[in-house]
Length: 259
Image (cartoon, rainbow, N blue to C red; front, top):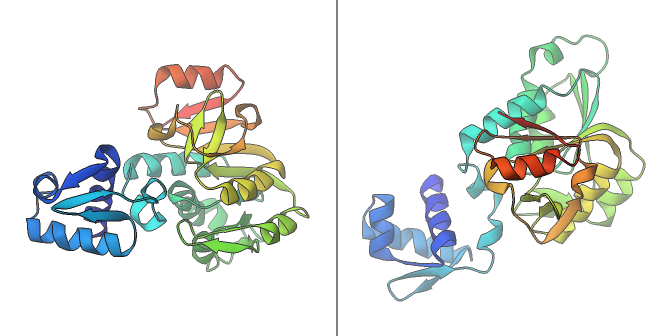
C-alpha cells in the first residue's frame, strides 16, 4: 500500500494534477482503489482532492520519510554500502536523517569487522535522526550519541538550538550527509531550513564530509543550503549520474564515486 501511495505521489509530483481514471491505469489498480488512496492522502494533507482527481498538495515536494523509501531503492543500497565501507573501525561518524543515511546505518550495523571488535566501541555514531539511533542502539559495539532538538515528523530529524548546542561540544572524524539536492554552483541543500542549519552544524564539526546522493538529486537545487561543494571530500552516487554534473563537481576537488 505504501509503495502504491509513493508511486501515486510521484506521478502527481511530475504532472501537478491527475484524474482517477488515468491514475488507475498507471498504477494498474481499480478506480475505487485510487479514490480510497486519494482520500487517505488528502487526509494526511499530501494532496488536494478535486472533482474526479487530485492536485499537488503544498507539502508534496517534501514527502514524509516513510513514502520516500521505495524511491531509487537499489541505487541507495549500493550507495550506502560503498559509503559505509569508507568508515574505518574506531571512527566517530555523523549521520543525519534520510532514506540513504538510514541505509548507511544498517550497513554499518552489520559490518563483520565492527561486530567482532572486542575492546571499547568499534564505532561512535552521532546522529540527529531518531530512527537511526533506534536501529543502532541495540548494537553493543556501536556507541550511539543522539543530539537534542525538536523532531520533524517528515524526516525524524531533531533540529533547532538544542541540537546545535550539543554539536558545539563534539568533534567527528567524518560526516555522512544525505541531501535533497546537490548543484555544482549552489552546493548541497535540503528543503527545510531547520534541517539545513543542524546538518550544517554537523558538517562543520567533521574532519571529512561524505555526501550520499542518488543520481536524481544531482544538478538540482533545494531551498536551504547545507554546505558548499568545496566543503565536500567525497560524493557517493550511482552510475546514472549525469557526466557533465559529475565532471563539474569533481573539478572542484571532490572525489566522486559512482557505484
